Image (cartoon, rainbow, N blue to C red; front, side, top):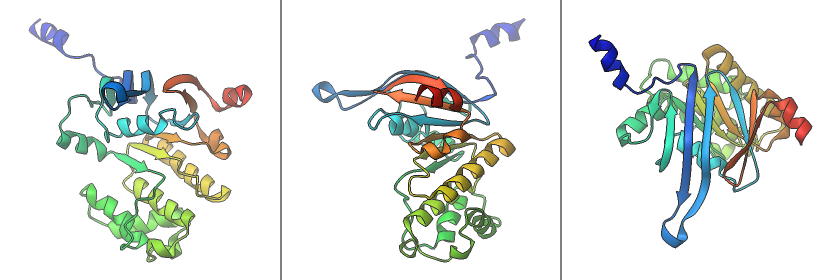
Length: 248
């Protein structure tokens, strides 16, 4: 009986099938007269194993939402649960621990110019403290993205599309549980873009990873399980690709 009484005080468990659960999230920049609200009452469930595409006009809050989910910004109001961790009130150290399970792909490649493609990807393996075989892991991921012959090149010797693929390899090499991607295919031709989303699909299928991707790239919408449209900081629609095509 005591156990039952005790468990009644515990917070409701998060559905184990959910990678991300967002409830009544609001977010603003600035304070006072400069305060500008960018997200309004966002509630969203993202199950494990889904590829979700976030679309919407420029300035609608998509990248802000990604950085909040990635524990790169501090939540102001509402609840944001990532892989069973409520981000509200977490210390910096705990936020870093959550981030280790997330692969980030941002528009600015953020590559280290002094390191080769392979070393840039290896850096990511080091951050998660899995040192064994990091060169092999990095080389294998770069090869999957068509850069097997470029592993010893430094960023200045790579094209924009190649740099983008190195950044994607770096995000995916640790096989993270969540991938947050901001326009990952913007600098890529159609074939490379398709390779990237196919790899993401493989991570979802084989490892139950969840991908949340901001994109305006209509060539890859068909890979998504869901397309969420964010307009002026509000969730406008949540559909599958077929419904989305009919409504656009």
